[in-house]
Length: 174
Length: 335
Image (cartoon, rainbow over all chains, first blue to last red):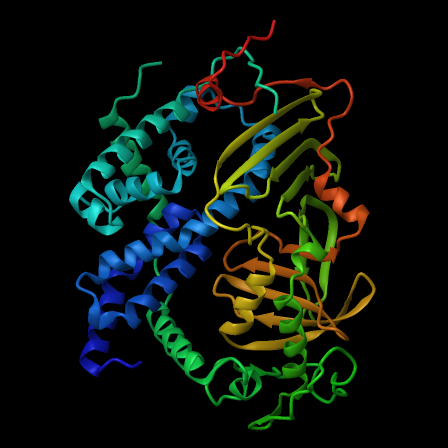
């Protein structure tokens, strides 16, 4: 499967124009640069293979890169969650809630806590500055779903960013 | 605190995302690499998967193998016949470089990682405060570990992970994180997360349940059979040197990794992976080491142990608002 020179040239132009944006998108979603690069490379492989048939290669590449981060994301969340919790508890960080709330790190941490689908919507809407319609087209979902996912994600982030009350609570038994 | 309005949150979020992305760019040549990978996949499908060694010799450039300059492989007796290769690869010359040894080793490694080794392996991942890989492939460490994880996938699919961290002086921080991801049953999966804090003699345990996205295949420890398989398929593999891992003679293979350096240590006789060491380019952190150890009762216990020491008090480490979303029952306050 080889592209003609003109198509290959257009593919090269596509990578030059969009490669950075795709890696930024994948990186913001998965939080790991290496895995983001892997996801984007996988997306570009598929774009290359389907170049002649794609009407919107960028939307396809974004969707493929996002999907490629999904499996890794679940796996990493599982493996790292306990480690991160342990690190957080062991930390001597004494920032007050207000201070933590205002930092970009806290926002990114809250973003990381979102389910993968909601996070993809948020990053496309507010990281890539896509409209609701463009986000819907990229993810092959309806604009209604984009709206509801956005609202849920923002509500969840607000909840996460709200500092806990000091009184300890007990969980139900596992 | 003033409630956060949507517009304010969105503005802050845009700023945070922009800052996070500011120094991120696509690695040079990612488009070419993708194009080559696309060609390789097409070629692999056409040729079939039965001729890896010829492909390695450059016929289809599926796997390009070389013994690097100064490699200990040069001039050494062949590893063929000493292990599990039933059909030793023919000697293939690539220019002046004889690649028989590496090809044989890779065949054994590929056979090992292709098998169902999850159930027979416990993964022990750790980071030293200070360590590096010497030029002959040996891992040189000094001082204590900063943290370690034990991970095991049980025959029923349950995934156990136990994490601990140390202080600079080598003493444990006293905080242990244990994560148990249950097997998939009717498409659903449960997860139990336990945090034990020896500093204040407390623990928390939280159980959640949801729909599984797929079979649990990965380990998230920067080391897994699938990751090694992917690396072996993707490009140049070179022998870095010979060393020992836990007393077993081992060969260090340098695997392709865009992020930095990825070294796989395999049993010199059988090809069984023994250890991976990964470093990230531009990251000053010491290497991330993962040992593949047999799933003995003792090693499994290091991953599975989620027992709570006697006298520890149960607490909730989650903000109340988030906790409420996990449980619909009213939760009593602690007195």
